[in-house]
Structure formats: C-alpha cells, structure tokens
Length: 376
Image 1 (cartoon, helix red, strand yellow):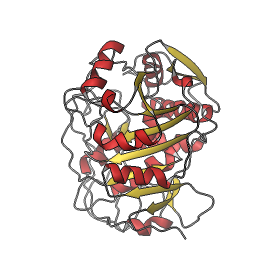
Image 2 (tube, rainbow, N blue to C red; image 1 turned 90 degrees about the vertical axis):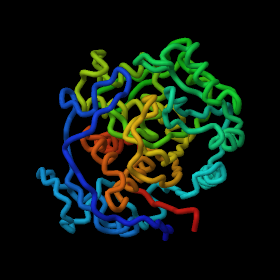
Image 3 (tube, helix red, strand yellow; image 1 turned 180 degrees about the vertical axis):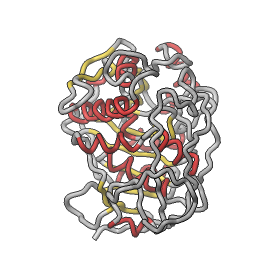
C-alpha cells in the first residue's frame, strides 16, 4: 500500500465570489468580470489529506453559499488519492524546499533522460517575481547535464524580445549555472494536436526538437487568467512560442489574447500540453517537478506579485503532469485557518480546475494519484 504521511489538516476556508485585482502586465484586472468565467465551487473541506482516498470525484454544489459553515460533505476539487499501486500515477513529495529536497524528489522518479536534455522553467519577469532561484535548482540541472530553456512572452515586458530575454536570464543568474537558450529566437515549429476539441496544432519554439528529453521545473502559484500555474501551463503556454502563446490564449481562434472564451483557453492549454507530451515519446521523455513556495495569487510573469497568504508547502514530482498539478491543488485546499483563501478564490474565479478536467479527458494524465511523502 502506498505510504501517505502528510502533516496537513483540512479546516475552514473562506470562499468568495469576489476576486482581488491584479497588475499583470497587459492582462485584464483580475477582479474584472468582463471576459472571465466566474465559476465558483462550494468546497467545505473538513478532513485530513490522508482521508481523501475515498472523496475523489464527489460532486460539488455551486449554490452560491459562501458562508464559512462546515457542511461536513468533505468534498474537495480533487481527482482522488488511492491505495492502488498499479493503475495510477505516483506523486512524490518532500517538505524540504532546498537543493537537497529538490534532488530527492527528482531522484524518486527513477527517470533516466536520454540524449540532449532541456530544463524548462520560467525566467521570471523583473523586478520582483517569484521565479525559481538558481541556487535552488543548480544541483538538479547539473545532474541531468541540462540546458535551461525558455520562450519569449507575447505581452510585452522585459522578456518579449530575444535580446532582452537573454539579459533577464543573465540578470536572474541562470546563465551562471548552465547553458541557456530561448527556444523561439528563430520562430516556431508546429506540433500536431491529437484528440483536441479546440486545437488541431500547437506552436512551440523552433528549437524545441533540438532536445531529446525535458525536465520541467515549475513554480506553482496563481495566475491572472488560468487561475493557477503549474506543470501543464509550463509545457503549454511556457513552451509556446510568442505565436503559440497567442494561439492558446485565443482558444485556437487567432483572435484577441485577452478577449477569448475562458473555457476554450483552458482547454487549449491542456491540448497544447498533450501535444508536447505526445511528441516526447507519449510522455516517456519528460518529467515534472512543482515547487510550492512563495504561493502568490500572481504568476511569475508579474514583476510585482501580491504577497502570499499561505505558507510554503514543499516540492512535488511526477511523470504525470495532471496528477502533479491535481496534488498541488489538493494541498492548497488542505490548508487550515483560512491559509490560501486568496489563492483558492483566484483558482475558482477563473474556473481553473477545468484545465485538469479537460487534460484528463483527452488523455494527458490522470487526476487520480498516489501521494508518497519521501520524508518518511
């Protein structure tokens, strides 16, 4: 039976339909109701993470009741933790947010990269975003002999042009620890999307295919448009060229990045992510690590993110990006005394869980998972 030893307990969370504003560059205010799907889930968690085994896909009422009374239904926005060791992906976890902890959860995967290895991360928008610091990731980048890769943004700022983006990478210390490449400095390449409902093709950086294996390092956090950002966002929006980012944001219509239909955007992220996984040996040549620190409601594309209302949680890894992001979501909802309430509201006001729903539906991964705490 899989071990699950988590010290976190579920208690009351303040859930609200009103979202605080956001200053992400060139994105609409996060409190705006204009283009955003203001779906909200009435979640009343009241048990420990260890008890989530059987609560999995319980339906969640959306009756508009935002009171802090605990109804005792124990529902969560989760897939399901399970005792099965064979049919579900494993998510490994440590509470040790350090180079040693990061190396430990990576090694727990038992994955051996082949060929030329890319390490995908966000370089972070200046001046004060919460990107993963070079001193945290250096050891694991060295271990895979990786080249750090990133793509240009599609919304202006310091990372929208290749020369400026290389400067940001240098300023943030990434070029000191490894080789670094902007994948779309020479444009885009096209990946087919199989089984999608909004995309038939995805545009990634032209140098994407120069690498045989990918280690995806993601800082888990909120996001002004997607609700949250983790592994799926990092391989869709993150690996998208500037052209590809705009394509995903528009839901595959080629229209405005900011004015598209919300669920189509979320589904496009899932489908773009699947195209990446499919290209890399149906997921055999890519693995994922999410770092749950500095859990702001704002993305690392925001140079001045809001301060977190939640403590640091840990580092998680998996070969399944859906299971990994789902486990992180479940840990957010598991916090006590209202910790993380702002992040929960950010996720729900953007209908962020729909990305996971669609990703599972199209076969990118599973929302059911076994959680293994390697600290025990």
